[in-house]
Image (cartoon, rainbow, N blue to C red; front, side, top):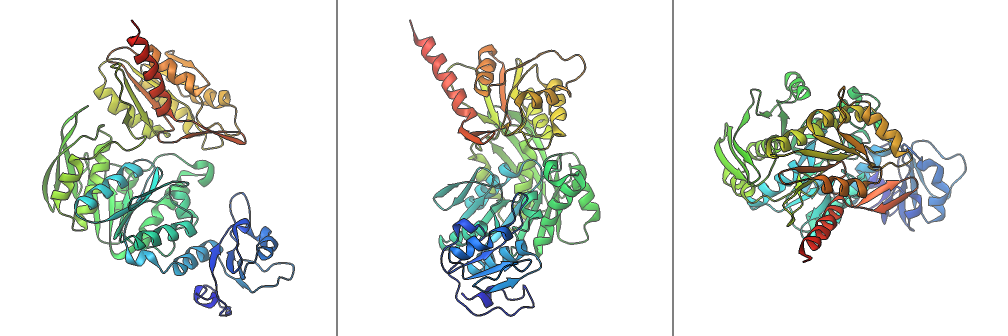
Length: 489
């Protein structure tokens, strides 16, 4: 492909028709013959590394402002290099999104489970489906580690192209507020866009809740002309979207408020849930081993989108009946000691509140929660998470999460500030592994232990260092030691 073809419509400048062998937005990764796109990031500006890109053999540069010094390759100036990168990547990889049916999911909580449910339903309907999200990127039989909830623009198009090469026809993907704000999904058109909920998160990046919400709302501008907006009517911001939406078609879902698709919960226990989905496409009774009342809305979201897009209700029944645990989402760690331990990614106040409410319904004894908050991230949610834990748990153990450049005790102090007046059933154990073992050691029969905040993550981030760490692995080791101790005569 030539530079002129890649730059078509992006600038009034006429780019030369030189061949381009690849596209890069990281100067250190540029290879000879590749196009370098200089992107302004939150930490660094690609325009500062033009010389390095040229030294490494860049055949041309895409910039927002001309370089101060003379360079030896063509330079194309565009108004927005982030948008240009996404569109250039799409063209370079053959516009793979045009050969896939896409469902995007955005919202503060519920994105991961909803995309897993979408994939399961579509595959039960005989549709080969890829998945892009927080836990993993799935392309056929390949499972790639996820670096971002929504990949960068260049990687996103490369992954979509691989899905096309593998013969996949659908993709369910989480679409983060960062990705929407940074234009990573330019060039994509969705068959359905799902809104799960709005809570307080990522305000370290977006600054205000209004800007955070506005970023997420942009997903609906990427719908195909007849694409479906699928909105949670139980969410206050979702109802605002429904009132203000001029575009059609719109499908709402919910359990408490009037909606296009509603769900009645018949039973909820450790063995799973029995539900009835009521919709214009029929009444669908469902049994699923998925645990937790907070997952009802995730089921409603995925089912609503699939029904609207013409998927048979039998595929929903089949997929939900066989649905397993989502990594790090209300994930129960099996053991032979009789204790209940659950690992969950809940790292916002709303998410923590919902998972605690679900466990409160299921746990007969005390409910013990272990959690912290990430450093260098939204500080406003810390006291709110402390309040939720103090109101809904019987005992709280505060620990470190990914402290990054902050001192864990400073973060813990901010969490404690939100405790309900008079709440004293807590302790501080900064070392996360020790905090988990402490919680499991104090648990008795019928008690439940929730380890929240990191979920599927296999690392812990400190200042200038990332170390291997998994909540689930720690729990499994504790149970293994306990089992051996019990076995000793």
